[in-house]
Every structure is written in structure tokens, then in C-alpha cells.
Length: 165
Image (spheres, rainbow, N blue to C red):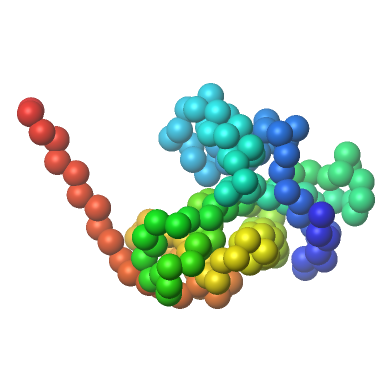
């Protein structure tokens, strides 16, 4: 558990456990709204038991008294060994899979603290770099990534075509 004084709030960042499954799913459902809740619940159950993935939670409120704190955000990070755009070498790479902070707590340091927890976790597992992605039109995510030290590696447009219609 790491505590931060981020602007006008006290943040606690800690690794999520199986006991946090509902909290994690409630937060990440706001990010992945198109996914059915029960599918996300099962995905998160798997993530929380997989040693190549981690979810960190951010809480705002009293330091050391989580019962009086509010969960305000989460980050899902994985270790990838397959090809990643911009990869420097063949070493495993930390991948920021998704990050979400409640609207009223944005631009107050919570996302930066969650990203730092992810970087520390990946570094401890032998990663020399972090990667991530966002949609071309997600300017808020682009600005966040640039503000925490990511550099743009590439831009892609993905295509799909139905067959047999």
C-alpha cells in the first residue's frame, strides 16, 4: 500500500485482491461499458489470480482507514512477451491495459499515482519499458499518456469486412 498526497486529496494505492472483485468490476465497468458486467466479472476474477497481470485500486479519504475511504479508480497492467508497437528489445514489457478514475477526481494526481504503481510493478518483474494504447479520437487519454512520460510509437486504423453476406 502506498499513500500519496495528491493536490487536495489523500490517495491510497494498493494491489487489488480477490476480495476486491466487485469493487474492481464496478470501476472498470465504467471504462469498458460495452462489455457485459458478468463477462467483466469473470475476466477480472482471472486477472486477479494471474501472476502476469495486476489491478491496482486508488482510494481517496482517510489514510490507514480504508473503511472511510472511497474507491475512485483502478488500473489494469499486464506483462506482455508478444510484439508490442515501439518495443525496444525482446525483454518482457509492461502494458497499461486500462486505467479509469472517477470524473470528480481527475486531474488531481490519482491516474498518475496508479500509472506509477503499474510501472513499479512491471520494473520489479524485469520490464525495461511500459506500453499502452488509446483510440485515435480519445484526446483525454492521449494527453494523459503524454503527461506521464509515454511517447507515441505509431498510429493505426483497424479495418473489418464481413464475409459471406
